[in-house]
Image (cartoon, rainbow, N blue to C red; front, top):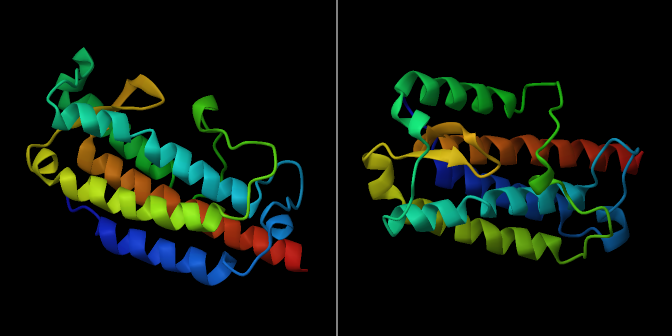
Length: 181
């Protein structure tokens, strides 16, 4: 299976966030068009939280202390969950999915430095991906940070991460359109 060019997508997402949102003040970043739509700041904070939830797993893999769930040995289960999760975060998918509670964005105001935090986070994410190259080549399988039931290849996890980022940045662009009109 061909995987996405992760670092290029991370750079595209980072540049888009800087271009679209870096001149916005804290109030605008936190505006929600309605109660069921996250603000720009909440979308970005959510991405940082969800992406960073993978870091402990990567550390365990690199330290050779990671324990995959038993069912991660079955390639059909790994493929099923990988495809399912990746499809669920596709930007073209219009149906919203409820996120796991550990990844819910905060409901208080997010500070205006969220853009700088996101940009710095993206650099950490690229380094984490670089440090995992050997793990990718060995077809490492992990569980989702949200549930040990959900397993997929690490390469698929990286596809999920960058695709999910693109989805939420697109949602933040839509929020910007709504609050500007």
